[in-house]
Structure formats: C-alpha cells, structure tokens
Image (cartoon, rainbow, N blue to C red):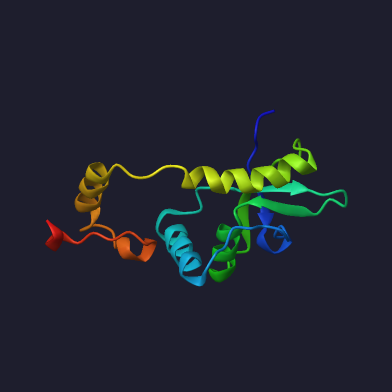
Amino acid sequence: MSLQIIEMKVADLVPYAMNAKQHPAEQVAQIAASIEEFGMNDPVAVWHDADGVPIIVEGHGRVLALQKLKRKTCPVICLDDLSDAQRRAYTLVHNQLTLNSGWDADKLETELENISNDIELGKFGLEYDPEKE
C-alpha cells in the first residue's frame, strides 16, 4: 500500500486516549517553533476506528503545536491497514525507536556551530555554547 498525504481539519483529529508519550508545554512550544520556522513537514498518522473517527496514532505533539498555532488543517497519513493491536503497538514503537539512538557528538557540535549564527537553536531545545570550545 502506498501512503497518501491528505489534509484534515486539526479539530477532527482525536488523541488516542491511552497515548503514553508525554508532551510538556515546553516541548509543544519547541514543536510549534519548528513548524513556524520550517513548515509542517511531518504528517500526523491517524487510524479510523469502527465509527470512522480519525484517532491519532503518532503526532500527538504536532497536533498540540498546531492547536497552539491556531492552524485549521494539517497533513495526515492514514494507517487504516493496521489492525487495532498493530495501531496501538505502533503508537508505542514509533516513539520508542526515536529514543533508541544518540548523537555523534563531534558531528552534532560541528552542525550546531555552523548554523548557530543563522537560526536561533534554543527555541528548538538545541543549545550551542561557543564558550565551551
């Protein structure tokens, strides 16, 4: 199955009630800043329940950021080919996989140094302190 990106109303997207991933206000603000700076480049994934309600599978933080920004629509992919168990598992797996790796410290430092004069990195939770050199 090939994924298609569609636009949906943010207000129609229903958070998964058992989503275990936390999204503190500071993180939501960072996501909102990212959307403002770079655009909404990562579609929200939804799964339609038996009543046709689009339940968020992954992208809860992005939806909160879009609400903060008062955006009316967002790009969405539908994962309706997943079973209910797969959808619930993927909600966890998607978030865990991003936590299963770290940074190459030297490359990260070089990238932060190279872009710190052009983009305010702190608003995204990235810090570069040239005094540490």
